[in-house]
Image 1 (cartoon, rainbow, N blue to C red):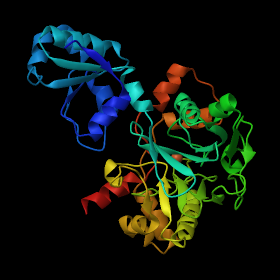
Image 2 (image 1 turned 60 degrees about the vertical axis):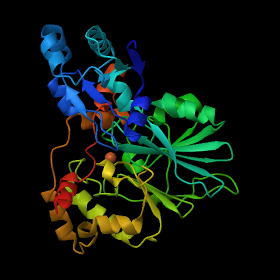
Image 3 (image 1 turned 30 degrees about the horizontal axis):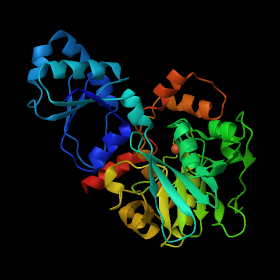
Length: 386
Ligand SMILES: [Fe+2]
């Protein structure tokens, strides 16, 4: 069998299907350590660099499993994976694929999941396995509202076109720091109205419709309600959206495991107090509401259908010690004791998302790649060890 290209989507399906293969990542150790393929099930993985294949080919071949094994190669862009695939083919490996578009295509992959089937609207979760993030799409009567789309805007535009939907609105839950948002570009390309909270976007160079607390921004008559719920804390303008009283898109305020970091803006005391009040409000919400987070830390947060969607009652149980905090001071202490540095590129991403800094495509790719750091995950790690 000749070597062949495969897509990030196929790779995701193989991981989900627990198929037998070895993922051979030929990037250097540093890049591999910083960001690698992760999925809902363990992946057998090897890291042998492309440079080693060029210099000490035979030693590299010795590190590989037997020649009948299915090998799937990943590199930065595509070329080196193809080069290594050709070497493996020459050595008699029978089943070798290389990832088209390199690790970037994995980083940008979006997996659409339909969350509801029992009503006359469709709510989609778009999982981004390379980032650990989720954006959303709500469709009703040929109209699609997007929430927190990522910069892979072709995906959203194609998704809408394939389903015969028009993107009418693109909504941000907050000014994102960990990935480049696609809302501005989607609004430009599709004519959709960009909705955002002025507390976060006040200084932005973007034409947007200001969200107002308590407003409805949904569809015409008969469509599911979409209620705006200001929920400051992760950022001053963090906003949640309650859909049909059944679902709440929480952005980075609460996650399935852990809560949003209030320290990304450099005002930890002030923002922690505000977050404490918001968490207090969330505690009083109907516990049957399904929480739809903007991020996840690990795939163990997914449900049996591999979606990131849980009733609030379960979220409260999973994060019992956070939700049990009654005193503001104790909460601020908890936040401070779990603080860690934020990646240096976050400041630039915020500026890009406010259109106050323009970067070319290549720089945008570099800024955007890598896992999110939006949760107070030191806490989550500690919680897991208990
Ligand atoms: Fe965030």
